[in-house]
Length: 363
Image (cartoon, rainbow, N blue to C red):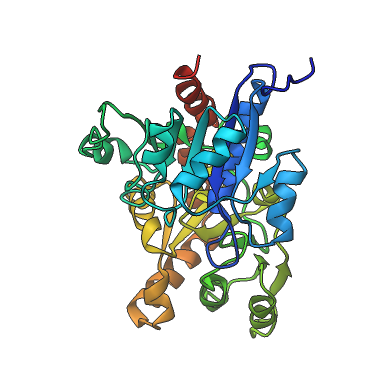
C-alpha cells in the first residue's frame, strides 16, 4: 500500500531529534534508527532532525533505510515551527546538549514527546515518556519528580526490556541461549568504542589486551585516521595480530563470530547482550557510569575499568584490567556464562514496547 501524503499508512509522522559526530559519537543516532525501523514497519513516516557532522557512515545509516534528514534549529520555538510545518505528531529527543526547553515547547504545541535518557543525563527535558534503557532505571525514574510537567503523569519506560535494537541485531539473535564454544588456539577479539571512538579509548585498551601476552587476533574499529595510525604502530608479540577496520555497517555480524568483544559501556552493550556475545566493558564517559555499574553488578559483562583511570596510567587500574582480560581470553566457560546471562536479559523486543507506548497517545 502506498504511503499517503499525511504520513505513511497510519497517517502519522514522528521526528527523531538527535545528533552525531566525531566528538559526540553515534550512539544517539543508532538507537533512534532502531526505533525508526520499528515505527516504519508499522506504517509511520519518520524524519530525522539534526546534524550528523558530515560523517559518511552516519549518513549512510539513514540513506540506506530511506530515512530523511533535516537540519534542526537550535531554538525550541523554531524547532516547534519546523515540526508543525512537517505535520509531525510526536518527537523523540535523544541528546544531552539539546536546549533544555525543547520538550516543553513541543508539548505546549501539542506534540507527544519521548525523551531518551541515561541516568540523570537528558532528564532536563519535559516529556510525556522517559526512556532509560539502563539496568536499574526503574528505581531511579520512580523518584524523578517530572510529574513536574504541568499536567503531571509522565510515563517511565525503564530497564533492559525497553532496549532499542536494530534489525541487524534482531535478525542475528540466536533463537536459544548461545552454546559454549571450544577454546580456540588463537582467540579473536573485536574492540569497538563507538562509531568514532571520540575519546580515544582504543589507544588505551588495546595495549592492555596485548599485555596479557596471550595469542590473539584483535580487530579494532577506528573511525579516525590518527587512531588507526596509533594502533598500527603498537608492538605485538609473535602470536598477536592487530587489524584496524573502519566503522562497520554490520557490526553485529562481526560481533557474533568474535570470541570476545571489548567495548564502551554505551548503548552498543545492549546489542551485544542480545546477540549472546561475551562482552567486556570500559566506562568511557560520565553518562555511561550508571550502565557500567549495573551490567557489572549483574555479571552481564566483565569490567575493564574507567577510561580516565586507564589513561592516567593508574597502575592498579591497569593491572586489574589486564587480569580481567587475561581471564576471559583463557577461560571459555567464563565467556560462555557472560554470553548466556546477557542473552537472557535482552530479548530484542524493546523497540516494540517503546513504539506501543509512544503511539498509544496518538491513536
